[in-house]
Image 1 (cartoon, helix red, strand yellow):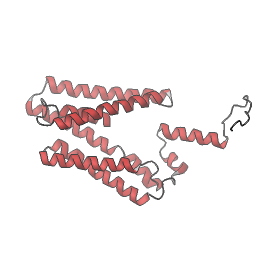
Image 2: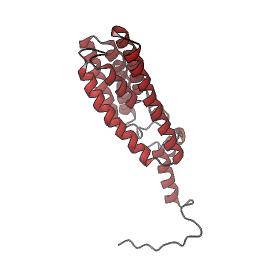
Image 3: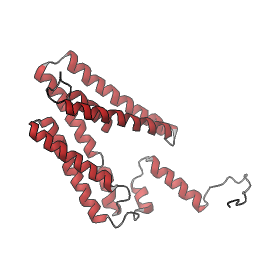
Image 4: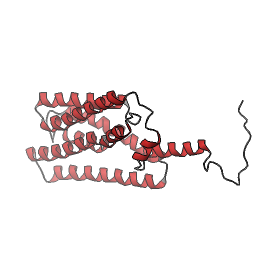
Length: 215
């Protein structure tokens, strides 16, 4: 969601779409490059072939959606209509991006633990949303103001949740993993590591046990 948000926002900020908005274009262009690197790293190190295929499909959908918006705005629209179309598309994706941590917020409330919601990430969401919200107000640009106002609010909610449950960083335990059984690779890997540590299926019965050679 962050990748498609950056792509569409960068496109929206281009001079032939939204004049005098180059700051929006350059910053989101840099964000698109960074998010592309994140996606590539995820695809390279995904724990299973199924997960890798699913994420590759989502990445392809993101690229296709951006291509459709760009082509329609270039070939079929002009002037204010082009700005309106691209602005609405960028706004919808931006709101979805800011709303994506809602599942983690639900998990925090259910487990009463902030183990899966890092403080610095929540703070960054709040500061980013607030700063762009103010920028949109000063520039009187609703396509910047509205989504980032939502982001500022959701970031503030995350900080409030962190303040309430900050003492329970490791309290979720197995309950957190059970509640968030949605194919998350990090949690799956952690579960397998715990299984190995407990000796449950950690070794093949046909493989001899090695002696401890730690110095």
